[in-house]
Amino acid sequence: MIFNSFEFIFLFLPLVWVLYYLLGRFHIPFAKAWLLIASLFFYAYWNPAYLPLILVSMVINYAVGMFLGRNKGGLWRKGILSLGIIFNVGLLGYFKYYDFFVENVNFIFATDFVFKDLLLPLAISFYTFQQIAYLVDSYRMETKEYSFLNYGLFVSFFPQLIAGPIVHHGQVMSQFSEKKSYTIQYENLSKGLLIFAIGLFKKVAIADTFAGWANTGYNTVETLTLVDSWITTLSYTLQLYFDFSGYSDMAIGLALLFNIRLPINFNSPYKALDIQDFWRRWHMTLSHFLTTYLYIPLGGNRKGSSRTYINIFIIFLVSGVWHGAGWTFVFWGVMHGLASVVCRWWKRAGYRMNKVAAWIITFMFVHLAWVFFRAITFGEAITVLKAMFGFNGVHLPIAFREHLPSLSSVWFGRLPFTDSLTTLGVSLTLGLLLVWFAKNSLEIMEQKKRNVTMAIFIALLLFYSVTQLQNVSEFLYFNF
Image 1 (tube, rainbow, N blue to C red):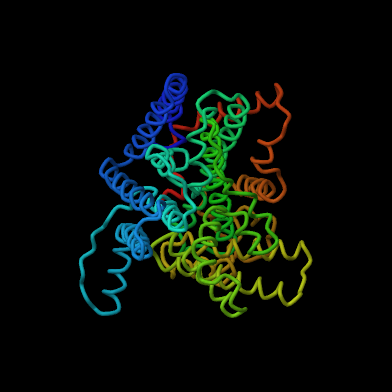
Image 2 (tube, rainbow, N blue to C red; image 1 turned 90 degrees about the vertical axis):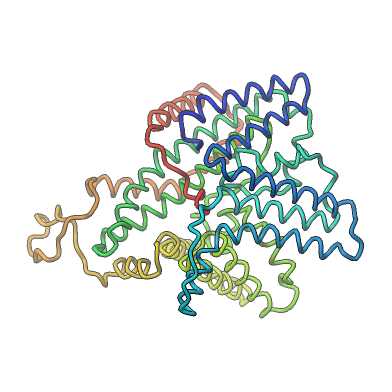
């Protein structure tokens, strides 16, 4: 079940919402239990076979966390924490990286270990990191004695379960115990509907449109030349932006319908003026996790410049690996790690850059790095980049031939896209203008003004989005 589907919007969500508040009026633990059961059903709807996996993970982590949080274990506390982390990393490693590991072992040592062709359990990358943070904080005596219902909702709450944000236990678990969370708050209801409508529109009307062009281009990489390669890569850059920001909006909006405030995960990242600024805006909760539970324990910036640069590089390498089991993701992480090191060195050296130039350089770097993020293989990424810089030839759209009669016919060719060049150009331009200059959805949500015009705006967004629900497509971060 996905947010942009008929069964979710017209069946699952209304049923869960109504019963949540009805049960909350009589007995809050029943409302909690109902929300937990609904969230687990939401997860199992994809593949019931993986429901036991998340349940076992929740029970073991809860038990270990409670044990550590009560200051038990004595001299064995650190060993127990280590076993808990190994358990989580082991699950993630087995399901997400086993075949990748075997593939590389077979290549290096000429062995023939058999692939398991494991399907990646949904959300395992997200709930694994959430629970590791819980164990570490329990070891530090920074957690409270939570109930299993609260803990289960912290892990499985359906708005954020599949693709984040990566929620910290301290941000949400206490909210599940507040009485006001179980009575309708009209301010939250208004904000939730608004940002959910915006997020849904981003996904079905914008991201999925750019997805068609991006997929067409990446399915024909060998024939790409200058113009169509830029259309392809810009389409993916915008698809990923609106897909991920759309999900983030919908997650926050859905949670608000239940009076739960999730952390912000997306804040206009293509407006960033340097790569560090980009990561303060893109997947903000992942950046927070890696900073808090990896960068700082490694020493952060407390052990000299060289060690600081190494620590920065490590967290981005881990970010690349976390995103996917493939060398393209690893290299994408390496690119961002090196860029972040250079950015930090540049600032510490006292250099400054014109804001417009800084913004253009940052966006172009992010855009080019997305090629490795999207490409299936390293060779495919190189082919796309060569096309972008003219090494695969320059084929102007054939419609330009009558306007440039002096050019030889070899300069013209048909683009792989079915839409006209005008449609492509206008869409890409509007998309870029939106991400560069428009208010983001969170800024719109926090506006105090609520009037008839805003209500009509929400209704129109929802109406159009619902008409597109027959074209069901998953969110990109479901694959990570």
